[in-house]
Length: 329
View 1 (cartoon, rainbow, N blue to C red):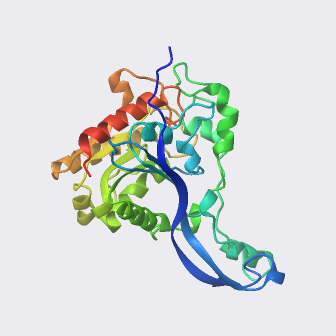
View 2 (tube, rainbow, N blue to C red):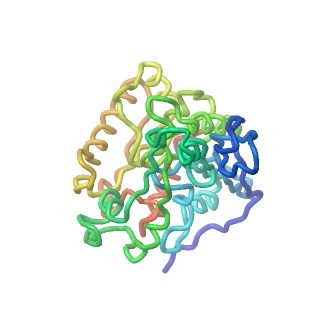
View 3 (cartoon, rainbow, N blue to C red):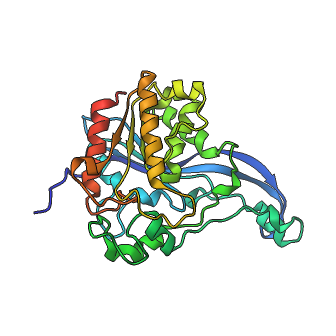
């Protein structure tokens, strides 16, 4: 029998943009010279939200997607089941979903591409636009050992793999080269402060973003949930380490960590082990960090995309309970 969920009753839902800078661009940089030059806003971050209508309202959760993805990661699954955004709202948490700056509804600055097209800039000045293939995501996201072949215990709904392909979008994150700051960091920090405090939940490539936002201003950050990404001691300054002891941190990893990733030199097991070292160091410095690893609970087969897995709401429930028990406004 399907589990009955709490009703979805909203006080408010909507969307807005946060951050951004107003810049001047030439007619060529804007793409249609006949329309003329002028000013545009770049580096703004799109945010959509749902606020539950409940007297027992809990802490807001800001959800940050990973590489080649958008905020859709947290919404309806590829096979049509409830997403984590709706689950958390049904359980009393206002939810704010973002599209990283340079991705999806946040848009990007087209100036360099139009300058190259008109011969005003060298092709090498164009930023790389990354788009993941179905073959790469199958292995890197640990759906199975080789393309089209699932793990025997996989939690991913493999019949919906064709729909999963549609979730991938063009990724222009390369326009913000490391170690320079990504505008999404400051936008997340501003959003958390604007909400009066929030839990920042990041996935994969976006897993480091909640940490980076906390370094800008920890006042709005009440807790971090880092899902298969972000937590590592490499390059962490003493000040950053001290910041990360100010609020609870939950790290989450799926199964089959030793599977071949399909990416040369990339090991999810190495990242997991680094995360365990991170947790030990944070706690030794007086912080409060934990690992949620479903195999330790007798739950096997979760993928990198655990928010899409068949047991996605079970994993979401563990995270929700951790937030409710460890994070205070």
